[in-house]
Image (tube, rainbow, N blue to C red):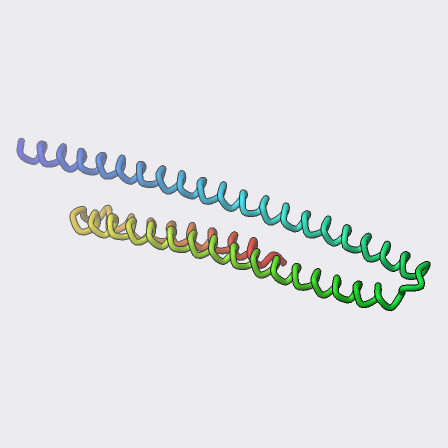
Length: 168
């Protein structure tokens, strides 16, 4: 009779552990989906920024063409030449500042995602370690699988971030 009760309690514990593991896996999948949505938003912002820069360059080129056309038909060529040189310097400086700002923002986002991923990974590792210590052989097998899964998710997120920050 005692063996039957022990077997039933063990099966109940296994079922409870399985349900807890399934809940954790579902939570991890939701987090990965949230990270993917954030990465998609970052990609959209990146694409919009590139489009804006292209429009800005076209407008600048059109302005330079008009100034050059004006210079050809105008006797005050020397004055407009220095004006054009100043405008080019200002535009180059604006582009440099824009690039610096965009890079800085991408680095901030990357660091925030990296920090939250690391923090969540540490939390989940602590939880899994505690479960492993109180669990038994079954959890000894699940812990490496969970850690590898979390590392793969973190690596995937970092790869996506690098693709956004440094698109090639």
